Image: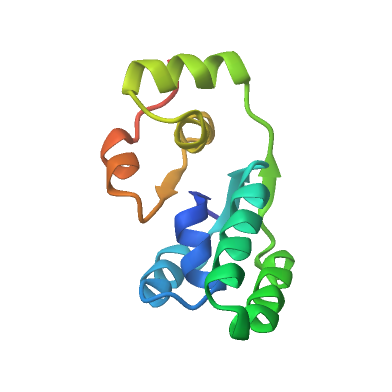
Length: 127
C-alpha cells in the first residue's frame, strides 16, 4: 500500500469539512497515512482558532477533531537537525520542512494544500 505524508492543511480540510475535503479524501484513498507528530498540535491549534472565530460551531469542531484517530494516521518523529537544514536550504518553516523531510525519508507522496510546500517537494529520495 502506498504511503502518503499528509500535512495539517490537508487534514484540516478533511476533519473540518473545508471546501477541498473531497479532493484530499480522493488523494488519500487506499494509502497508509503518515505525518510528523507535530501535526496533532497544528490541528489542535486550527480547531482552537476556528472555535474562537465561530463559537456557535465549537461543539461540532471539537467532535471533528476527536475523529482524528479514525484516520489511522501514523505519527512519526523527525530528525530535528536534518529538518532544520532542510528548512534553511528550501527557505521553509521548520514545520513545513518536517513534512517534506518525512515524505523524502519514506519515499512517500506529500499531500498538502500549501502550494509553496508542494512546490518544494520534488519527490526525490533523501540525500
